[in-house]
Image (cartoon, rainbow, N blue to C red; front, side, top):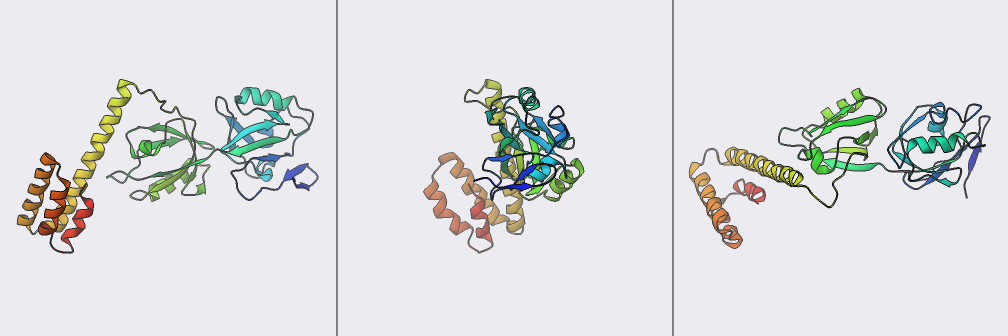
Length: 272
């Protein structure tokens, strides 16, 4: 059963425990619905379905519990879950109840982005309220995590963000560590069919990833075996032979003889 809080401006629903289940709200309003949704403090976007892209702090929408990243499912009980913003606005503005009831569900997805060897994530954002992903290569760390140009960043490391300056500072502070983004995914996604160009891009991304891992492994070898050239030579000779013969059991048997100290064996976990 829904519970509502009465006040002079209208009725507001209490938010339920999780932000993800569907929820219905009665919003406070001006004297008509003609300014919906802007005059109620929120903006819509998307090409169908429609999503709430930003909510003004202190507005009736904010007080009712609407959040950026919510998908609009119903207006006054009418299913609008597949309609674009223009159609949703037209329906809302013709409703007799002021404001119209609205049913929404959060569509924010959490993405964990592991930085590249340079500590960066490989995407750029622009604008304020909302923050738009302007550029993101599919081969970048962010691209491999699922981020695409055209998506909207709603949260950085669990913190809701509205201003570009705040988001940029939080992202910069995470360089070199895993970054968690709360994202509304509106950018184009890969379908099951993959073009030749896409396949080439994916192959290039995999090649670059292998190169980065090789550089990191060489750095660790120099750090641990820098003063032991003979051990270093034996290790690379064994790895070269393994690359030619692909005998996993043989490699597993010879590595403990080459890397025979506790410090040396830190390298074993880096060998793939």
